[in-house]
Figure (cartoon, rainbow, N blue to C red):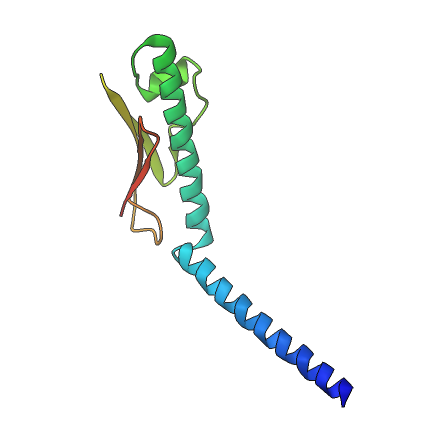
Length: 129
């Protein structure tokens, strides 16, 4: 009788563990937005590039006292980022009081990929579907 009780306890414990695991996996996939892995990897790379460009823009401002274009950041070796990461291309708009680095998606409607991702002088990432 003791062995049967131990076996039933083991089976019940495994069932509860599997239930908790399945709920955890559902919540994890819901947070990822259900985007395909390739889209998630691409968007993460673009966000990393935007943060690098924004950090270089802030560094340039600290040394030169003004914001500048992406071409100038690259040519003055403040950053070593390509001008695009397909299907996104990068652009920097500057003003006396700040800057905005934008990645714009070209081409069709790729599932799970925002149409535009941007970051400004506050280092806050914004996306537009």
